Image 1 (cartoon, rainbow, N blue to C red):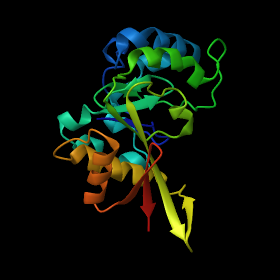
Image 2: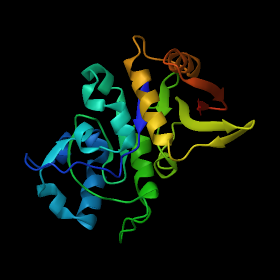
Image 3: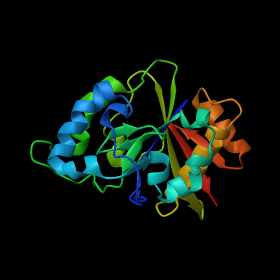
Length: 218
């Protein structure tokens, strides 16, 4: 199982520490050139700013509920964090504070999802039989989808008077809590059914629906 997370708007600002080493980030061989090109167009000063673990830099609601730094190293190795500045990073990758909106358009770069799609297709694991649990929001999900692995997107809904509606304000919190339950499982899920069973054992009400794990929030 691999858990794909979005980045967060909320980020901690490292006050000290060595700057980012692009050669040490996830999938450096496949993504390194794209990172250099994008940062050069966006803000080369980021290469001199203090950096810290990505697990500590991202501090939004999803990450608050997930509490990624508290998870064992083995569990963190099952996590990739999407970013339109870095492509993807592992939780232990060291990055600086930054702000880069999915709506950003840079000369020579264009839409971030389009820019990253070919490189991510080459780099990211995508083997038949693998389970990829997708916590990303729409813009980040559009940058890459597996062709062979099973993709299970996590969605949040509420029911009122028999009508089911998508949850917006709590969706990030729900995804963070579900991600933690899956990553803490003694036996990592290997398919949608076992992922749903883990979520249910953690007291979530869930349904499998056409490639989605729907969480019903009461």
